[in-house]
Length: 270
Image (cartoon, rainbow, N blue to C red; front, side, top):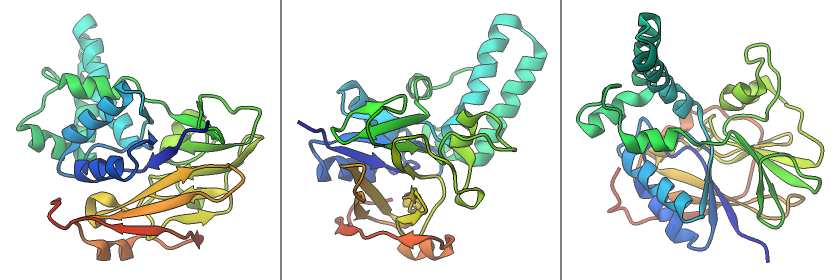
């Protein structure tokens, strides 16, 4: 019996939309595209809910570029505590400040303060075990390597490819933008699915599908159900509290995909 797999793009602290997603698909296995933290109002509750789903066997969690930025400060601070090398301490502080500028400041405010010396254990747990690329087959199984049968490649920003700016393909999956493609796909992969680049509506560009709708601003979250890899995905857009008109600032490209909008009660606040 096949398992229902639903992909959740960049939540950026919208715990309310994550809760609505689990209510919309109560039996699904969720695949988070990363960028669950920063910018929005409830990064810690979002992380708590994702970890609970993972521990229940109901979620697979991928890394986004925001999680990668957040890792840098704690990693080098951990190195410093073992060596007392001031160069490592400097790298820790530089990493911390980079994260604050990239959106971590919202997490610091949410917690009422955040330091490397007292880094939240919940956030440490979340950041410590995130995948970068997975492949979904028709039976709903999630693979770490491209399987022999047809599959859908899922990663935060792009497929794992070598790029002049990111020679490590596992870095490229966190950062590349659609205009830097099209990207080659491994044999057997029918299309790839990504967040990272905000779009006005779920969009196909060649064999790549982009579904980040800027949920932290717009209140719109695209939930992509992966079924048969040879068929187009089914996309449900949750419409919660936010400013959907802000989507007009996002770049328009490719082919818009059909979606099923679901209006959420407006008492859900951002």
